Image (tube, rainbow, N blue to C red; front, side, top):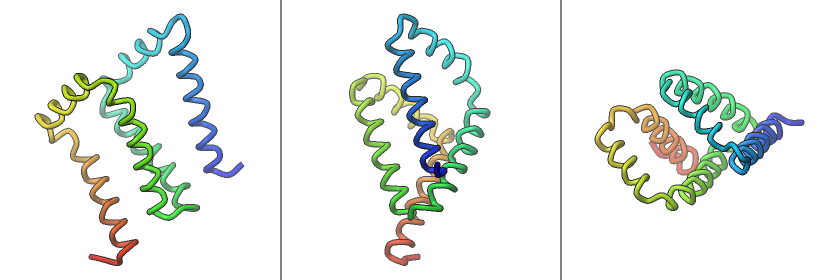
Length: 126
């Protein structure tokens, strides 16, 4: 199995486990776990950066940056499909983000770096 296939299998297993939990008689258990984990923002940030770096490394071994960013866009669209079902909650989050822009600087830098990388790769600009 290739590293990309392993990443895809891990994704599939996580999605199926989460779906089983959500459809089970005790979906609150997922919320309980999330309530314990989500306050640890520094730890989660480091974890997401490490996992993201590992996944990016393996993806960029086989795909171009344009293909990877296109897949990121697909992921954003799929998340958007969920978010539009909760407009009030999303608007509250959007307002919180605008009021606390300092908390999203790392994500902003990553997306700007990806945008510049794409422009350099596709058009040879900068």
